[in-house]
Length: 290
Ligand code: PXG
Image (tube, rainbow, N blue to C red; front, side, top):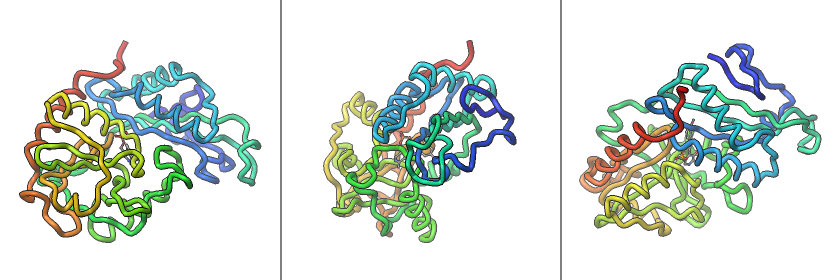
């Protein structure tokens, strides 16, 4: 595998960053997780738009343009013969000194890894996930805004550990007010009386690209979509529940905190959206081959 770092390709074992990079020392940087399907990079422009928003929020000046990053992502896929896979794009603050002042850092680094995707077991898509609410709450907007896809993911990692300790793959994170925010690497949706609902971004959800895509697909199907504040009570009393994310795509949830959701099996609205989403991924995106 060849890894892109600052305009050059390095063999996997030589793809290295400095121990003085503030991405490592302080989690000072940003990232995106992107998928390629059927020879196309799915929603690439949307991912790069979000990357630049994250950069602006942390006063990081990305050393190459939006168009150049798009080209570099596609080129890295081509170079690695990745037609269906996972792309990790990282921009770090760069090499600095042992002090957290970012002004001491030289140039931000851009890293692109194009690899195979590790999927959840197929069985979970068929039968649905069981998830739990965990004690670690989502970061406050006023502390570290959850909209920033930063390299500082400890908030999510802690919640993931708590989910794993409870024997689950994913965790529901509440915000400091007790409303549902999202999961550790996925957004959450419920279906109630034929309507689709997902927490508002103000509740502490990431501006998920899969979230946005699914909301659009539902609207196209004539399913009403809204973004109210949701409590655990709303989740427990939903007809259906599912999670969305670039990695997970759309995965049904059948049990939350020990309560079966709806019929206790993946529901029909979820199944329809899964089908629509898969069709879309096969035909849209930035082509990898010339
Ligand atoms: N919330 C959080 C906190 C995320 O990190 C999502 C929601 C879903 O957003 P998208 O834009 O992907 O629909 C994410 C995305 C990984 C990995 O390697 C994580 C994500 C995406 C891809 C891979 O764990 N998180």
